Length: 346
Image (cartoon, rainbow, N blue to C red; front, side, top):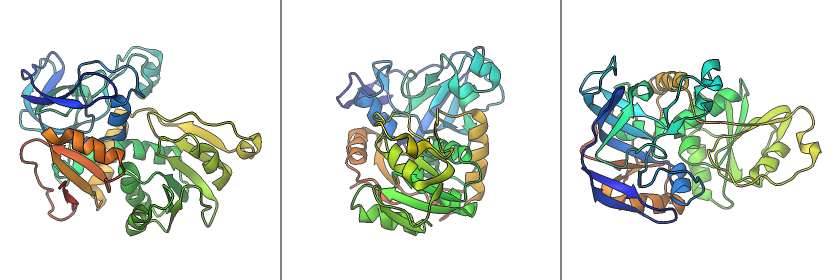
C-alpha cells in the first residue's frame, strides 16, 4: 500500500510502499477513503509536539471502510463505513479512565501521533474508537468532523448555554462550529488574522453576525470565547472581551505560551479552560448533531500523494474550510447537495 510517512521533525512526508497492516485483537483494518489535514499534523511535523512514534503516518480525521475485523472487535462488519478520531487508545484502568474522563487517560495513544494514521491507503484502528458514520455525510465532508468538528463541539459544550460566542481563528473548526452555534440560536462573533477580509466574509456567509481582526473589539461583550488559533497572545485579548463570569476556552492541542497579564482581566469570576482530546460520548453526540444539521462543509481535496501540498496550503492560510486527502473514489452524501465541497486543489 502507499503511505505518506514522516521520518523526522521539520521535514516533509515521503511516499512509501508498505505492507498492508494486519489487525490484531480488538482492531479493525480500514481502507482509507478520505483523511482531513489538521493543524495538529503541522504541529507534529514541525516538532511542536515532541513524542511522535517515528517513522509515522500522520492523519487523525479518517473516514474508512472496514475490510477485516480482528478478534474480539465485536459489533463491526466488513463494509461498514467508520470514522477514526485523534484519541485512538486508552487503558481503561487509570484514575481518569475510572472517573469517565477517558480523554485525560494517563497513557492514551493518539492517531497519527503514537499510532499510524490515515495518510495511507489502509490503516488499523482500535475498534472501541471507531464510529459508524451516518449516510447523510459524504466521505470528504465527514472527514473534518472527526477532529475540527469534534473538538469544536466539546469546546462549545464547555461554554454551557452561552448565547454570545466569540471564535478566534476561523479555520476548519470555526467554520463548522459557527453553523452548529447558529442552529442553537447562539450569536457568533468571528475573529481572524488582521486584514483577512476573505475569512471575515466567509464567517458572515456562514452566519456570524460580526467578523473582524483578532485585536478588534466586538460590538457586545461575549459570554464565551473559543480560541482555535495556536496563539497564546489571544488569551488575554479574549479575556478583555468576555463579560464578568464569562469563560475563555483554549481548544487547540498545542498553543504558544500565554503571556503574563494583569489580574484585573481575570477578576470578576472570568475563567480560562482548555479542551483536551475528546470522549466517545462526544463523538456519538456530535455525529448525530451533524447528521441532522444542514452543515455546509467547505473542503479542498487532494490526492494522497499530494499531502505535502495540502500541508503547505494549510500552513500558508490558503485553505477555506478544511483540506482533505482522498484515496480512491469517495462516496457522496446520502442527500446530494446537503454538504457541498469547495473543489479540488489546482
